[in-house]
Every structure is written in C-alpha cells, then in structure tokens.
Length: 309
Image (cartoon, helix red, strand yellow):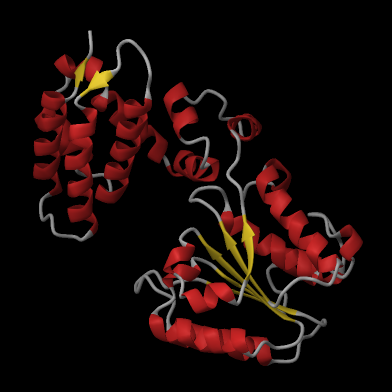
C-alpha cells in the first residue's frame, strides 16, 4: 500500500471528514466517489481510522491509541470491510445482511464502521436491504460507501448519504509520487497519460503490466508501421487480457486525437468509432477469438491512421 503522506488528494478528503466529525456534522453514511486509479481503496481504511481513533486530535497515520493499533494489526472488532465476491462479480444480499448484523451489535470501543468497496456492485436485493439500514440508522455506527460509478447506485441510496468527492491528483502530484516510489524514468506518454490515475499505474508496474503497455504502444506507433508484423503482433498480444488491451488502445487513441502538432495523425476519429464498437463486443463476451479480432483491428489501424505531412 502506498504511504498515506504521498497521496495529498486522499489526505485532503480524510482531513475533510476529520473536520466534519470534529464539528459533530458527520452523517451515519458517507458516499465517497472518485475516478478510477486514484486510490479510493486506500481511502476507506483511513476514513475508518479517523472515525475510530480514540485521540481525534492526533489521528495521524502513526497514532498509537488502542483503536489505531488494532486497525494496523487488522483485527479491530468494530471495523468491517465488504467487497464483491470475485466469482460472482457482485456484492450479494448475504454480505449485506452480515453487514447489517455487524452494525447492530454493541461496539467494543464506542463506534462501529463498515467500509463497502465498489458499492456500485451491490445486487438489487442487497441494495434494497442496505437502503432500509440507511433509513433506520444505528447510533454510533458509520457506513462508508466507495465507488467510481455513483450513477449505478440507487438514487434513494445516494440521497441518504453524505457525499465526499475525492479529486484527481495534479500532474505535479503524480510525478512526485512516481519519484518517491522510484519510478521517475517512466516514458513521457505513460507518465502523462496516466497521471490522473497514478495508483493504477503503480499497480501495473508492480505486476509487470506496464512492460506490456510499453510494448503495445510501440506496436501502435504509426511511425513504426513498416516494421510491424500484424500477424505476429496479434498472436503476441492475444495473450493479454482483452479488456485491458482494448482500454489501453482507447487511451492511446484519445490521447493521439487530442494532440495539437504539425505531424498530428489523421483518421483517428474514424478508427475510434470502430474501436468503441469492438470494445463493447469484448466487454459483452461475444468475441470467441481475440487473436483474429486483433489481426483485423490492427490491419484497420495501419490502414486508416496516417501521419499528416
């Protein structure tokens, strides 16, 4: 996990909640929203720490009060995290019932906190059960909903939560984070294109995905088309997760279309429409052979996208 003090945009949101709590104005439910890749998953535990800390005036990352020590050890009896089940892809009604039971149990140290990651993945039954809890809150029990897609939540859930909007980091803040993490040598395209989602980029670095991203950008570089073997490239990159690869392609195309320079590429907007249609088919799972799809799309890419002389 990235050190808290290296994420100033997260620090700001935590301080906002801390101030609201100190004034006695924090609601029983907080809906925290932000764009993908900025560290929302790290915000939840820090908000829980802020609420549960027994030394509110000193609820720093290194606070040594009983609650903070228990949280750091991962065994605080008044803290629960709920996440979607990987095999189902949703938060089920069973999990919501367990959440409700947890909130209603008498706390050990005065307050209870539940963090729900990717709250937008609540299934309908779970969302309706959660709504009833929001309508009948338990004293000294706090619910923190985290989501990158708040529009997918029931409007009635949204209206019963106190909203916390987490801003995206600036380019300077992201560059400072990359430097602190020893990743200052990222190429200009990757550092600039993903500066608004630095945590995601750091995860790609950690799992090796960024190396595949670099290779993919080299394949897409229109200046290098004469040196690219479409069939070989398609065979190589068909092994990459299709959704990830197409998202990288969409990112590159939107970046290329936004460039204002004498050698700007043409044909990008036309190809973009084809790419979005293909992305929809991939997300829906209707493409049986991703390698053939790549062969077709790469051929179109080199055919349609040209450099303006």
